[in-house]
Length: 227
Image (cartoon, rainbow, N blue to C red; front, side, top):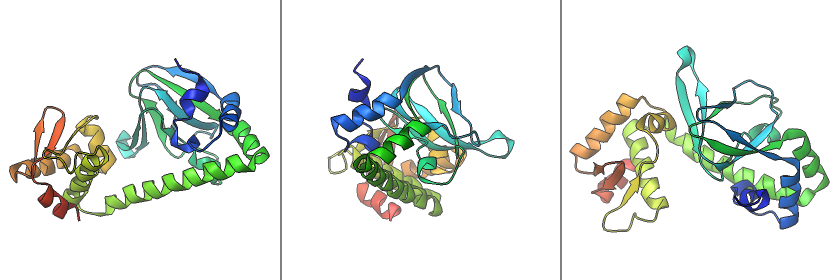
């Protein structure tokens, strides 16, 4: 496996750091292996630091009444999570985090990281800018929750084929890399609602499914639904 510095440099939060600055961060944290479906922290637990996924997958979610889960993020290498309390007055984790498969995570402790930020203003500026960019993306994502379900689903599909570069191809498509239960949670809807709206798109010949691949048949109509 590559060294820690070589791995964490791929995290968007650290992508602008110099080798020296990466070394500082690597020096205060540590890697840890987690088993499948192992809880990392629960909402309300004292904030002790944030994490970077080195290998595997982590879901971040909220627990509602009756134990119902609302999926917030599904994170793969080299995404970071639980950084928000560093930049707010919160002293607790705002959500729960759990592995979905065997995973390796890099933990950056709160106390050590705050000390490094105080001693190295340039590092602080770079990380703050990266965090602000992430907040803008999150605001965009959660802003979608206020639109109707059909539009929400259409926007999700449009975004996926745009991200993988296939939108302008003859056959725009993407691989759905999560279970539909997890996608429903990410979109803030029930699984049955997701299935019903996906069926409507298929019945209208706008999309079709081939295994775990979603293929866009009519990108013009899909774009209209997403607007």
